[in-house]
Length: 532
Image 1 (spheres, one colour):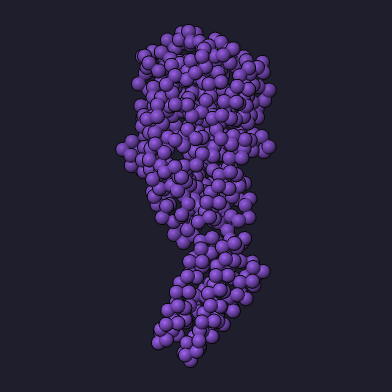
Image 2: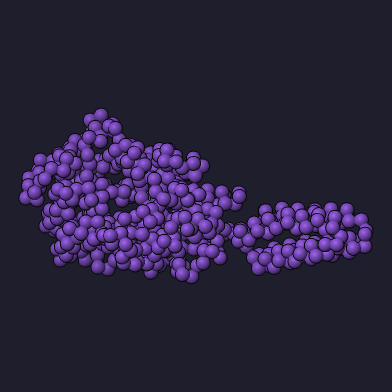
């Protein structure tokens, strides 16, 4: 039986009692009112029969049959001017007993809906779904919602629906086959916080957070990203202050510091719950359930040390007025693909192409040309698949610019080489952060500092980049003079001197970074719903 049906029945019981009290003192209208009460009891009977097992329904049927008999006796007693004190007292006792039984009914279930829009972001919800799907008191539905690319003028462009790209083990309900206004789920989980204020894509307006809130009493927002390092609280607040914080009933955040930022942005403290990030759960699940390697990867990866390469949106948008990150990646991809003993899984951000088309059309052709040039290389895979799990699992290390994907990768225990770091944010000699808001400490990775080159945005032409490569150095704890080629050699040799420090920093940055985050979120939210 659905919880909201059970709650409707419980809310009906006081109305029945009010009718009985009215009938006792209004003989002329008593029969009509008690007839309505009798009809209400019959509707309760029908709802329980439809929602409960035969054994549990039988227990209630006996009580309801007795209640109907008492209502008939009460009506007769009123019409014949007999005392009704005893029968009305018995009715009240029976109603209270039924109410108590319903409040403790073990067959009451929650209907829990998960509404991802991009399959690549499903990892922010999947472990919560697993917990709900395994819970006998929950019926879980995965309902991918459609979205649109934005045109340069911000109008809706191409329509997308990725329900067919969800993992095979996830049962999918089509969004057109689930009527929120009728089903009124007890819980809805979403990972899209922007509503109409996303300038790259937009979920279908029917699924903006304020529309979903009309149909549930528990709208839960789980960020699709892991928050990292910000220049100040104002910069972090810009990431937090999205439309969803007004309408969500609960917001899941990765740690207490992030919770404080939400509160400072106007969220009530009870709304923001620090329980970690479910994104890390998928890494632990992957260790027990390895993803299948795509057939087209096997020949290219066989016998090689494999590097996952990540390219984000934010780096391109922040630097396209000078030497572009596309040029930087062009340079390094050419260098790496010349090495016969390594292979590269290049995974551009899933929204990168749409972003360039919408916001930086002058870079779109450059990006497509780079993709086409790399497609013909023998030791590179361009991974546009919906899930990053195979790339995570079959790579030996990650090379990336500044990305939230880096934080999830660290949960694998494998090393990270990061291009994009401002040396002013961290003093490598004192091991202290300088004037930074650090929500995830990933500084025990390996870095290639591009300070004056990228952060000062000096207009270096591409031909000068190779010269600049030779000049860049970093001093990181016991690891010094780290260039990308040196990092590659280190991984090939099986060395990783910062592994333990990296794992310790991750566990301090993310609560429940042990594969249990989704289960804890599910337990917390369902307890909240059942307590209402």
